[in-house]
Amino acid sequence: MAHDATHSAARRTGQTGNTDQDLSAMVASRICHDLVSPLGAIGNGLELMQLASSTLGPELSLVAQSTDSANARLRFYRIAFGIVSASQSISRAEILSILDALQPHQKHKVSWTCGTELTRQQVKLMFLLLMCLETTVPWGGEIVLRSAPCGVELVANAHRLRIEDSLWTALCDAGRIEDLTSAKIHFALAGAEIAAQGYAVSVTAQESSFAIRVALECGDGRNCGT
Picture (cartoon, rainbow, N blue to C red):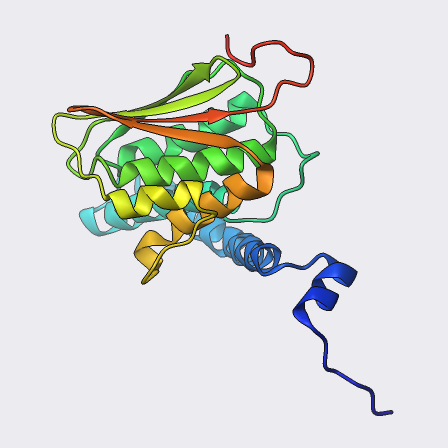
C-alpha cells in the first residue's frame, strides 16, 4: 500500500523526539556498543598469549598498548558522544576509572577533584569540555575539574597554551562554527549540549591557564560547589 513519506522536520521531531543531535548520539552509542566485544576479544586473546609464553615481544606489547588505548577511548566516547537521558546516573568511581585508563595514552594529566554529584548528562558535557580543553595543552600540561560555587570549573594549566578564540565562542553560541571539521566537532557538540541543558558558561584566559566555569542550577538554593 502506497503512503505519503514526506514529512517536515518540525513534524518529524515533534512526533518522535528524534532531533539531529539525538540521532547522531544514537549512532555514536551504537558504534561504541558494537566495538566493545571485538576489542574485548583482542584483549582476552593477548592475555592468553601472555600466559602461554610468559613474556610479550615488542610486537605484541605494541598491540596490547593500542588495544588498551582503544578501549579507554571507547569508554570515554560512549559518554561524550552517546545518547543519555537526564535521569541516568554515573558514579564517581566509574568516572575516575575512565579517566585513569586514558592517562597513560595522553601527554597531559587530568585531575577530577569535583565533589559535586553530577548526572550522566552533566558528565557528558564535562567530557566534551575536557576534549575542548585538550586542544589548549597539545604540548602537555594539566587539566583540573573541580567544584565551584553553584557549578563546576575546568582549568587547563601549562607553560604554553594554544587558544583559538573562534572555537571558544561556539560554547556560547549553541555550537555554531563556520567551516566545521571533524577536528572541531567537540566544540560544536559542547556548545549544543550547553544550550540543550540550559547552562551559563564563562571562559577566562590568563598567561598560563585557561578556565571554563559552568553554572549548574541549584533547585534548593544551596551552592552546588563544595
